[in-house]
Image (tube, rainbow, N blue to C red; front, top):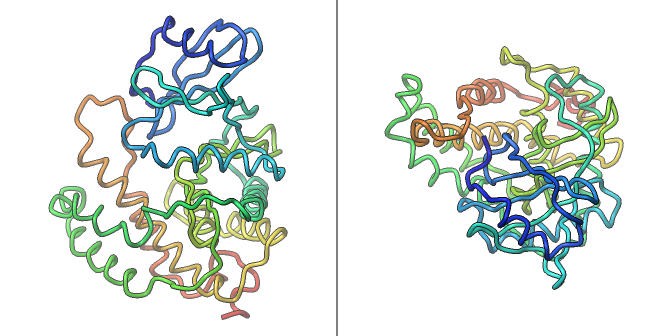
Length: 326
């Protein structure tokens, strides 16, 4: 559930008076996402998304997120747009939270993506990377390798409650990644959270990317690693190389990977799996009983992490030229 802050109709009506969106006719909470409170609004002029930014989101990052969406849209990427208020600002305050009204993007996310959808995702990701060039604002990736150890410390002593031996395994994995993490790869603006529920489709056609609230500056290939983890594994934990091949070929139809990126991909995929394992582990252990949040099983990403640990070549992900480049 992703409604942490409730709103009243009267408060919402007053808030919307600053926007050129017509008269409110209905609204409802959206029970997806984990970071912010989201509502679907219907007005006499159309449909919109209202987002209230919760305490886990640094208010100082909001200009980056909102500005990035405008930057990408101006360069042809299909994504939601924050609407300006009468005073020209993109943010207001509602129920004690910073809030924005976002344009509504048609489509729905896929519960069972196939290879052709993965190809479209790869193509869209590369297009986003190219469109992000020239964006003036910068935001470091707080959930990259430098942020993993502080996150791990919050869960370390209770890790074996989830699985015996987990504390020692993750400690060793973290030490390895800290020592071997790449230092020099092509970088730029990345989405950093392009899971299936952040990609909309109309039929088999990708209609747009949403939820840029983890976007940051980091290695471009790290974004690919996130997608390999989130799009190319089956529910039983097995890696689907057909989906991986489709995603990677879709990406390279827009932007070719460098030799260094190809070589680093197994390590980046391993790190991406650890990152999502750690955040899920923290939420699994720390979310109080009865909270209106659906906890995600961290062991799903432990399985993926173990798979990547055994990978020696990017060809094992379906990158056809992987072996030749290594």
